[in-house]
Length: 282
Ligand SMILES: NC(=O)c1ccc[n+]([C@@H]2O[C@H](COP(=O)([O-])OP(=O)(O)OC[C@H]3O[C@@H](n4cnc5c(N)ncnc54)[C@H](OP(=O)(O)O)[C@@H]3O)[C@@H](O)[C@H]2O)c1
Image (cartoon, rainbow, N blue to C red; front, top):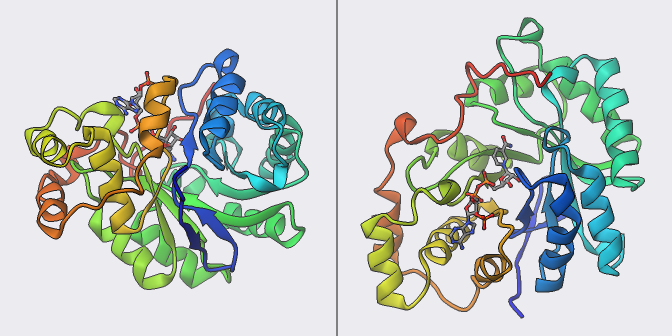
C-alpha cells in the first residue's frame, strides 16, 4: 500500500496530502464510492454542502468499518449562506448530515466579492467560532485571491489553514500559491487533472510513456512534488486505484519544469474566476 505523506497545517493539525474528492458524484453513488476509496487506502475525503452528498459521505465512512478519527473530512459553506446566522445553521446541518460531531476542516467555498457587500470577513469570523468550539478542527478558505487573503490578514486574527484553489498544468495559479507559501497557508489544488482535460497533452503523454506511468499519475505526482494537497475525483475503481499509486516514483526536475511550462495563465482555467463568480444555488 502506498504511504501518503501528511502535511502539517499552521494550527498544528496534519492533513493527508492525497485524498478523494466527491464533487459531481451523485448522492446515490457516493456512499459506495467513499467505501471503495477507503478500501483502496484513501483517508481524506473532500465534500461540500454544495455537492449535495454530505449525508452519503458520512454513510460511506461509517460503512467502511474504520474509525471516524482515522479519516480526514473537509466540507464547505454554501454560497447562499454567508450571513453569520445562516452560516451557523448551515454548519449545524453539515455536521448532522455527515453524522459527525466535528469536521477536520471547514472552508468558505467561494469569496463572492460581488455579493454580501463584499463582506467575507464576518463570514470568516463565524468560521473562527466553529474552530473555537472545537467542531471544526481547522478552518480555511477556497477560491480566495491574494487581495482577499490580504484583507483577512488585515482585519482578522486567524490565518486560514488552507486555500483550496484551481491548480493544474494549464492553470498553475502561481501568485496565489506563492502568497500561501509565504504566509503559512497550505494550497489545496482542485480539479488537479483539469477534469481530464490535460491527460491527452503530448508533454504529459511523452513523460508518462518514458517512465511507464499513466498521464493522470504523472500530473498528480507533479502536484505532490510541488507540495500541494490533492483529491482527484473518480467513480471508476480502477482510476481510483491508479490515482492512489503516486509514491513509488519521482519526476525529475526537467519533467517538472516541462509540465509547469504548460501554464496558460487565466485562459487555462476550467472553472469560474473567483473575482466575478456569484452563483447562489437555488
Ligand atoms: N473548492 C472548489 O471550488 C472546487 C471546485 C472543483 C473541485 N473541487 C474539489 O476537487 C475535487 C477534484 O476536482 P474535480 O472533481 O473537479 O476534477 P478532477 O479530479 O481533476 O477530474 C475528475 C474527472 O477526471 C476523471 N478521472 C479521474 N481519474 C482519472 C484517471 N486516472 N484517468 C482518466 N480520467 C480520470 C473522472 O472520471 P470518472 O469519475 O468517470 O472516473 C472525472 O471526470 C472535487 O471532487 C472537489 O472535491 C473543489
